[in-house]
Image (cartoon, rainbow, N blue to C red; front, side):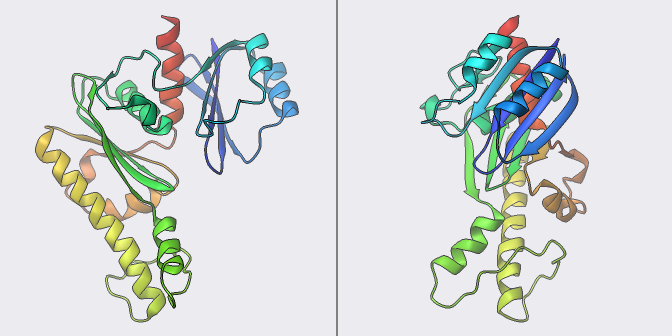
Length: 248
């Protein structure tokens, strides 16, 4: 059974093909076209498709094509899944956050998990051993913090993220901004991990998102390093699992 998974984000579109639960192809693109989808359909024997889109007010342009060629599923937080979702107002819960939680349960069943998705925002979402999800936290991501310092002040420059920056203190305006943003975000993540670790025993920490590797290198020497795992395809894994649960 080959599944097509499409995750439409704010700036990028992630496309993956799974053979059952094995990821066999993954691409990140800026625009989804009819030719691209027809190529996937002609070169892979696709049985199922799931589409998740943050653009809630827009109809997925190629929905009819995928409905004709595959068993089509539009992902939403209202779908019945194996997660006991206690989030108030489930329709306001971000689709990527919910899919990430399902992905965590898929990879680490019956385990206390903390999903840290470090992208445009940094989100923190925990799932307990009973697959109960209560909610989480949303914080500005690295680039958002850098942009905010420039946008909402009169003189601070717009500073690009320097992935090699490791200093604790800044020695000029640029390095002071990087110090505040980078060290502030790392300290925030460590603080959240400590809080959740005090609440959940044997906590498995899963990092995903575009800045996951950036934070992973800065958490290598922390006391939580042994419980830390990077899974760049966590959301895609969760969406693929929804197909399996929907077909069972």
